Length: 189
Length: 325
Image (tube, rainbow over all chains, first blue to last red; front, top):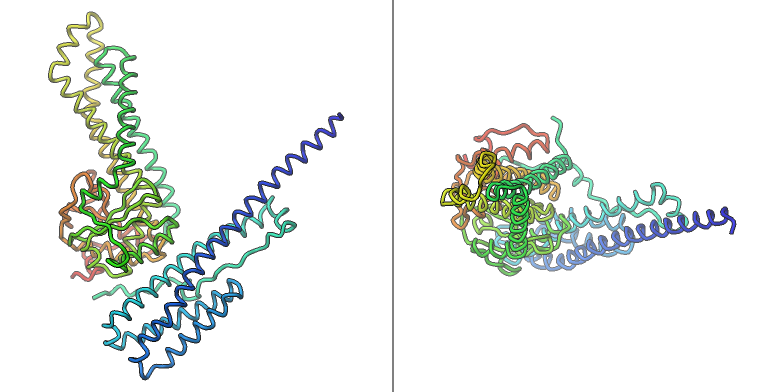
């Protein structure tokens, strides 16, 4: 056989092996994103489930501040609805829910009976941990998205990523105020 | 002020620890060689004992690798807790396990009013975290998160395995040196004089070198172990902050513990290096000397402040930070 033909066949085989390697690594990175997102969703779901319990527990005590409760309930409904609209919208709705919960907790501070209520305290702890777990899962999710987006945008992967249908993924954005340096009061008593 | 990045601190610490561990292994081999050479009178004997020293060292290492964590936990009187016994603690550990991207470790509580904590286990899949009841009572949620992040950083950085193995190597050096020195003083020397005809002078020199090594090697290896441990504490502080993205919780926890004069009764010389802060010494004695297992707490606080670009504190300011003065 002609040596030129052999060389051409050899080059094609090498290129095919490289392409398969690239494809597999991109698929793996994309799966990691889905896995990380599933982890966030579990916790978001848990938070959505906890909120009605909290609202019921505090409703009786908070006569004058029903608006705070309706805000939380509405924010929750929007967050549940945003679940199907992709990470960016979902993140925005969840951030709105987080801030409405914060104002609820701030109001709870004004009611001594609520602060002493074991049920409310437990719900508050459950919501705090869920919120922290959401934010740590989000760090992890965003890191995997960054890794994947970088991989599909760099040579040589970029040559194959487009034709094979690997498109850029969205970040699950941190709320704007959380991006700033935390302002913590160190003058403790 | 320019803030030092976590990643610089972490990579520098990893490199230093690896070099030190390699040096301890070389020291064990060297001691084995010198002893073998001195006793048999020829280099070949040294090679044999080097092999024996390294083999015994690795066997002990393997034993510790698999059983060390349960031994340490039972010596410390730790009992495992679940969701119903300590819900907030379990929640915080779960949060930090997510942040560190490690599996949820087993959680233990030690009934002692002195605030402290440690992590152990051979790898992140078999890790345990133990916390004293004093720590749970005295720290708020944010501070507890800082301490747990520090412990899970030890888990993620594989410090827990590292300290188990280096600990065993240092122990092997001490036993080997001790054994040789006793042998020399109780009759080993006489036997040697009877066997050897010529070349007694050269062998005497080798013997003196071996004795010097047997005296120095345990000291040097112990210094190295302690230096590694102090480096690893700084590293775990830095990685812990990387996980929580909040240096203030850990900083306040350190300041609070620094101001707490209680001594942890279940800790001893064998386990003190594993704890969050040195459990044995009192505040004023927690210096950063060559023989201490942990850096001085004030130095740890100031390294954290370096990360955020804040000015360093003096001891009295640190006490104020914890609300103690």
